Image 1 (cartoon, helix red, strand yellow):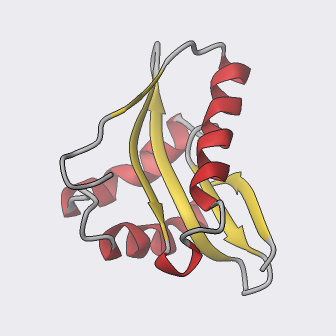
Image 2: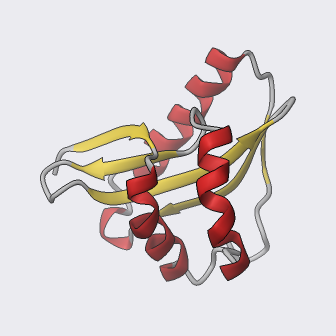
Length: 116
């Protein structure tokens, strides 16, 4: 297992959507799918994936966010196969680094009850 954190690419969207849809606790809605590509264009520094380079760059986790005065972290998911392997920690660290790079002082994450 060789995990790598990187920016999300348009080519990743199919795998990211499948990952988000597979997580029953995640409040990911079908209407959001067409918005992902435009969000990716507007906010490239805060839409990240962790890929397993050892398994054909399989997406192990993803974070979808947007930036204004703050970073709004809207979705974060980890493939169940990779739970406990630091994927969430890598994604959170990547968002923190992006915030520092962009000069953003706050990251907002809303967690729904039952999803913690």
